[in-house]
Image 1 (cartoon, one colour):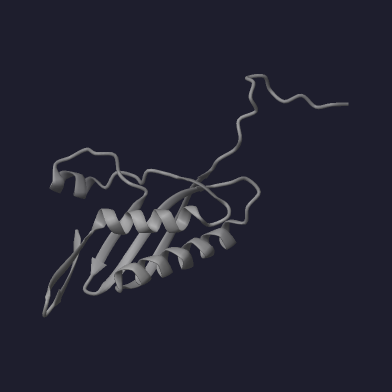
Image 2: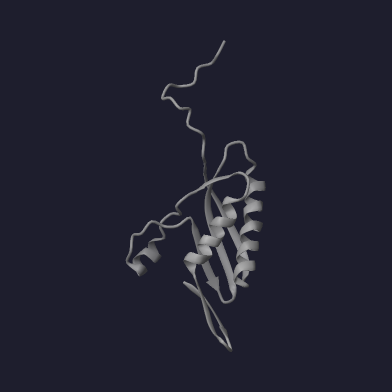
Length: 129
């Protein structure tokens, strides 16, 4: 998918990879976002494109001039899911609209998991008495 804008001086084409990059860069700066998760494989798109490449954490859909972005991420422990999700939505929407000039009608935030820190050892935690 590409976003094309025509002007009297020529055409501007923005690829889906660029939009995904803008969205990930905007989301990673939000407090509470730990990492990104690969989105589930879309069987229809895989069959149409004929590739089994690893899916990016961002999905961009265009309907006319409106853009819908879905982003899959993991959160840090002890964060408020709703607050982080709303911050990601506004950050991604603002970044994409400012950089492309296109209207972002919707930003879907899919929380795929929570990244817990590794304890550093394989032993289970012991209750101290």
